[in-house]
Length: 404
Image (cartoon, rainbow, N blue to C red; front, side):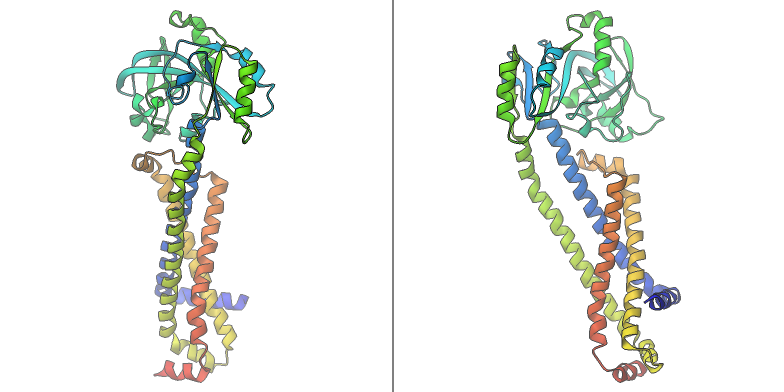
C-alpha cells in the first residue's frame, strides 16, 4: 500500500492539471460542507445565547413589580423599587434546586452621547462573574474592567459592534461625572436592553457612595435576580422562594426555551438537508469526474497491465491518488473557509444581525478534521464505482481499447 501511495504521489506531480481538477472539486465541496457545519454550530450556540438572555426559569423582583417582571424586567427599564441583595441571596443559597442566579441593579436614566448617538439611556449594573443573561449576547472577550461598559445597539452599539475588537478605537462616555470606556456592544436582543448602558455591579456600588444623585439607592440594593433551576423544578423553587423571602414577587419564565427550540427546529432541519444535498452532489460530481479521468487513462492503465501489474495494485493506485488529491483539496477548502469566516467576522454580524457564537479553537479543529475526513471518504467512495466498473472487464480489453 505504501508503494501505491508513493507511486500515486509521483503521478499527481506529473499530471498536475488532472489533479487540479479533482482537487478543485473537493476543495469546493469541503468549503461548502465546513461552512455549513460552522454555521450549524454557531446557530445552535446562538439559540443557547438567546435562551440565556430571555429564558431565565425564575425572576425575582421587588413587591409590586410582578406583573411586569417578564419582558419589562429584561428590558433594562429603570425602576425605583429595590430589595436587599444579601438577604435574598442568603436564602436562595439554601435552596438545593437552584443551579445559578445573577442580579441586576437599575440605576438611572441619563442623557448623554454614546458612540456619537445622543439620547436618554437607562444605566444598569450587572455582575460579569455570575451573569448568564448578557454575556451570551456579547461578541469577543467578556472581560470588563471597572472603568469599562457594555452598550446596546441603539445606544450607539450599532456603530461600535463592528469594530469592538479594534484596540485603536476607544469610545468614551461620561456617566455620573465619571469617564467610562466602551468595551463591548450587545447583539440586537429585541428588548429595551438595546437602548441600555451596562456597567459592572461593583463599580455601581462605588458610584452610589460617591454620587449624590444615587444616594437614594442602598449599597446592597438589587432590582432583579434571574434564576435557573434543575429541570422541572421551577414551580417548586418558586413556592420555596415565596415562603422564604418577603417583600418580593416571584415570576416564572415565559417558556421561551421550548418556543425558541420549536422555531429553530425547521431551520436546523433545513441546514442538515443542505449538508446532505452537498454531500450527494459531491459524490455525483467526483464519480462523474473520475469516470472521465479513467477513460482518459485507458492507455496508461493498459501499459501497466502489459508490464504485469496486478489489477489489485492498479486499483489501490487509483484510489490512493483520489485519496491524496481529495485530502489536499479538502484541506485547502477548509482553510479558505476559515480565512473568510474569521477575516469577515464583523461583516457576518452586519448581515445576519444575530449573536453568531463562533466555535472555539478545539471545536473548530474538530469541525475541520471531520470535514476533511468526510470529503476524503466520500471521494474514495465515489471513485470506487467507476473504478470497479472499469476493472470488471478483462485486462486484454483494457489494453486493446487503450491502443485504439
